[in-house]
Length: 209
Image (cartoon, rainbow, N blue to C red; front, side, top):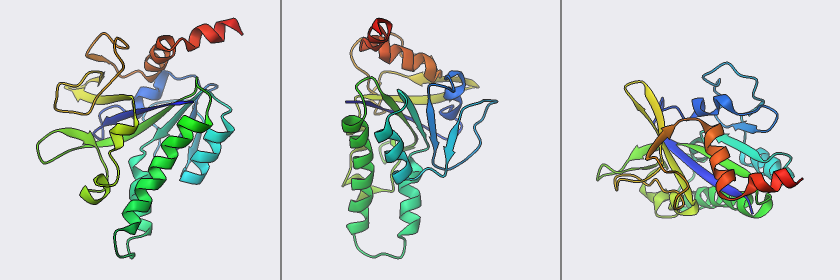
């Protein structure tokens, strides 16, 4: 049973940059929008990644760490492809496709596999920050954050980048009890990955091998 992790944030908040310290030999990057990564790197990326390609990679489970970059574009691109369709069924289908992707992580990967969903955020009518979808019709079908036990939020405050680890009531951030002591940590996905693995004892299992 793999672990899906949601990282939300506005464009330019440092979500993609957080990959900078990941080991190229130990991570698979599935780049939905195919944009160049914002740092010099040797990470191997699958560009134009579709649901089919992502699901195939996860089910093969050749790695213990995957990053799905800009997963909201999975919703957006499907919406563009089906723009001429009338009715509400397409919104149900889009919700089901995203739900099934998360279920692939949970049900078709090993328990020490972690999959990071980098996802744009938006502010709702009350000014609270949440994962971006395609509006209320899709929100009525899918409460995105409800499918994740770990939700971090990327921020850029005056050029200082970080991840928020605990909610102040104005966002949908959540993390397991005592996983992160600080409310704001460096936007370093390698450090986040190490912390999650330490919390669940995955590192101990690796040392025994």
